[in-house]
Length: 273
Image (tube, rainbow, N blue to C red):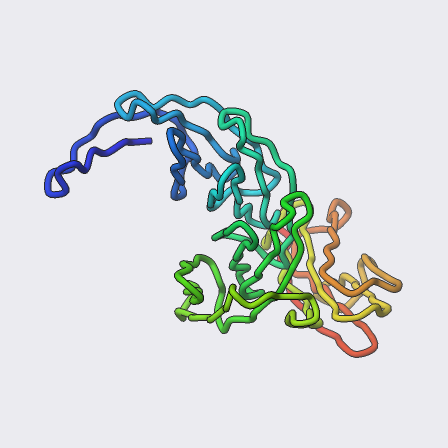
């Protein structure tokens, strides 16, 4: 990590540094502390009260890959890859700990938060607006589909600018208008691509449904032979996930399919051992 003195914008100079591996994403400063997403290593906390001598004072390991962070007051909101968002209590800056989480359909790589809402770009599943009024119990308010793969975002006033692969998607959201669940965009039937893919051991399959219904999810090999049934039975409305442990399977192309009374879809995945 490097601290750059920009007192003279035309002549930036190195003020201080701290040698550490793993910091690949944009850090976030709050008061005398800097919070740095470190992907597989979670969040690192640095005391930067003396910019010439930054000091690592704390960390918090997250279950996924910490890709982005936004801080509001005593809470840090972390985009944690396939583990959705993780909410940290940073009341004691050098002792952060997880108090809540929200699972996404695909992968969270960016995040922006206010006292009441967190905005989460979710790759193929568009933009999630999540209530964080109770940080221990975040829940989906609305999800808006975007044409590309939502990865990062910028929020200004009522506009949300989403980096969406080959697109820049601009959404308008009036935060002054009270939002209730009956105004939310209804969850639709959806089967997301497994993650990771390719994979060499286990992989996760996420799906969503707008109503309670019987769901069947099965794995097939390249010849169309059924390998395993992962889900069979009634599931409640909402977002779900299931894992496939491929210990008994050989390398190759496989297909996973979902069937309900109103929806069916099949996707391809690659197992490498």
